[in-house]
Length: 86
Image (cartoon, rainbow, N blue to C red; front, side, top):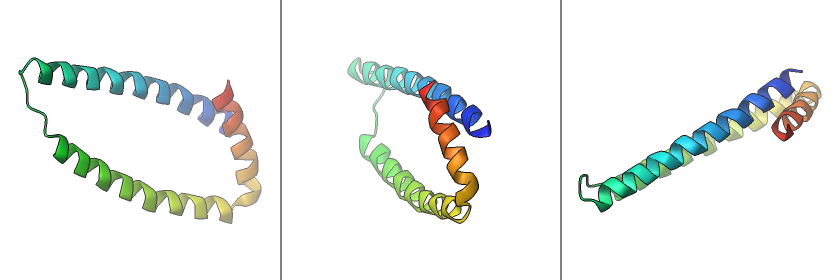
């Protein structure tokens, strides 16, 4: 049940994050195009790269945690996938 609830919550949160992120990017592009702001894309790229490095390191730790608790992780993952589907 917990996996199902988490999966459904993640699905809703991802949809909201994609819409908000898309709107922010469109706003940035339009403000830069009209000359109101100047966006430092190289700085954004370096921040993105450091975030991806951090995420990669911690996702490995999450994978190890799931592998250590495999019996409960299997049912959680099944519920999570079902929650993401609905």
